[in-house]
Image (cartoon, rainbow over all chains, first blue to last red; front, side, top):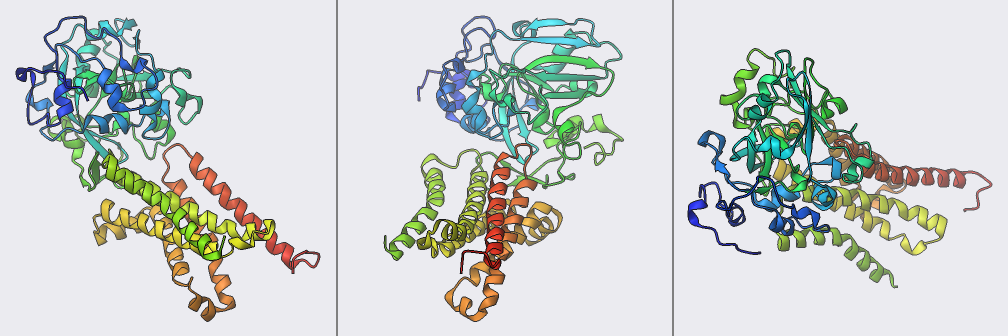
Length: 323
Length: 199
């Protein structure tokens, strides 16, 4: 493992960055250059080892740590764990398939189509989506519907900033997202386990909430392909499947959009999918979760611990009905 | 190969999956989801050794592999050991040995109910797999041990019930069980029919 020199002043928060690798990955903020230029290491095909791949992933520059309320104080999950245990069915249904198979994804150039009930529709290059905002680092809990969880230092921009720039019309009540469809780049799409493209959506007030985040990196570097490069959603109070990866379309609509897991099994995966220890998945309990790397489980928190911030979005709603 | 050597060889083979996961956890560290790994390895090999034990009789009768006969019990017991480990991992690492939570899961979650059903049957079969029990039960022993097909079916249903989207592995295991069961039914019919070639 290489050990680049990091000036100590650039280490943001010792309590948060306990892991040596993570500390290293924060490096080199002094250099200048366009955000998101450069070549992701995943182009060096055959890198099926997450660590080896990480060594080549480009560090993101000019990243500011987000305010304290966007950073949980728990120990972050190790980089290896967070990048080797993924659900990304576009690259296979096994947890280790994405790290193995996602080197075929080409993340440059990348653009996102914006359409629907919006003042500024169009096809927008990724750079132009990211550039107007300041990259910030947020440390969020992430809870999968399968009862495992992790704590990840994401790098990205607030979703609300981006959506506001597209000038949604007043009758846009929902926003939806789509993942790339490309059987060559995403071999898992050769089988129809999901009606591709993968789709997710949020109610407009959820999408505009300050916690909703668009990530372009994690652990100080650009996103590894298996974690949803080059741009993904992170909605920390909802089950992980809401946090759609490798986004190529953002649409605004009056009606609630169709979403992939809800389409597949609506009795098991609701549109809202807020983390809720009180409402079990029909087949397993949601009361507890296992943090990656742990042997024992820990209690799951309502709204994944973000209840103070987001519970008001659902005031008066029966969360057993709208799971 | 002598009979005891063949037995020893089979036992060594059945230990390989456990050895594999053990070495991996020891040398590579726990990794992101060690419990997931333990659960899957123990559950899958429990089912696989069960299917292998069911293949012994058809192999003996159809292929004339009479030397394989004593392996049926070895493979069956290996299956039971893996299934017991599977249950232990769940009760300990998933449920923290909390009797209330364990009982609730068994009663409320169909795939766990089915899994417990399969385990209970295998437990009875493992206990009665000794020479003494075979002697004691006589003809009833064969009848009792036909329950292995019920246990296998419950295990397959347990497998299907917990899948999110990719049913391929469960389908493959299920098809193998179906073929083995069909073979046994055909063999039984042939045996009963007067034109059957077997004595």
